[in-house]
Length: 303
Image (cartoon, rainbow, N blue to C red; front, top):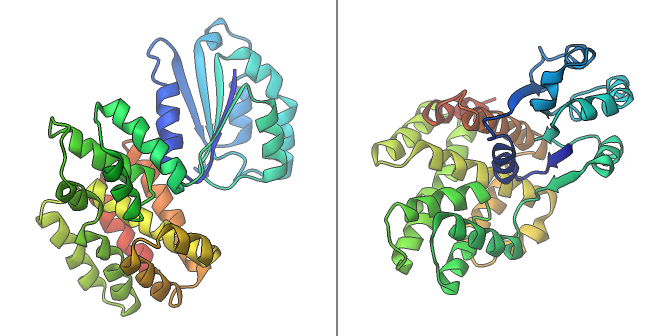
């Protein structure tokens, strides 16, 4: 079976990938083309010799279409059918923007294709309900609207915050508890880091992160919050009217995003986001501890 997963919402796409590959009765091969050591010839050689065992394999190919040359893509398509027929599942997983024309050709051939865009309010409501069902929570409609009204339309941040609610072992939550999770003063941390970076104050930025950890905030939650804010900032630079509409209930954050957008060029923000995405992937695959990732992202702001 050929499966394709892509889109800018890395949390939901990775969550699906994890679900699809958690079958312990099937061996799993991963080819990560964001790693410069992964070569197409090595990938193809794995499948040139028929084997009875390959029918029990799942193969994940990460970021091939966003990294490969046109020649490499053509070579892959020439050999695609034998690979599909030789394994149980062939999964193409793209975390970056793939080359659209050829990738669309692949998506049309796929048995299953999943695209995860960043959440808008309509999709946000649907996602919150799905997470509630998964975590055995039951939020009232007004509490869901509070979450969306905070302007944090980030699936990872929403999921991990609701996960924290689930640990309380109850279903009757107050507005104050929701505000604490989704409308924290800690949301200002992103803007404080940028202010420190623009002033060249690396030590101050490190103190800001350390102070949040000392207060007991989970490193992963802080990391997800920073990713969410950076994504919103890039979205505003690319489409000011669209983000202004989604954040009109959060005037402070919209004001700060407008302010910062005038001080950072879009290309630099995208370079920083690319590093965030890399650290995010390494955290989710167990290659990097969230606390260490927080220290590493400081260097992104001072590039």
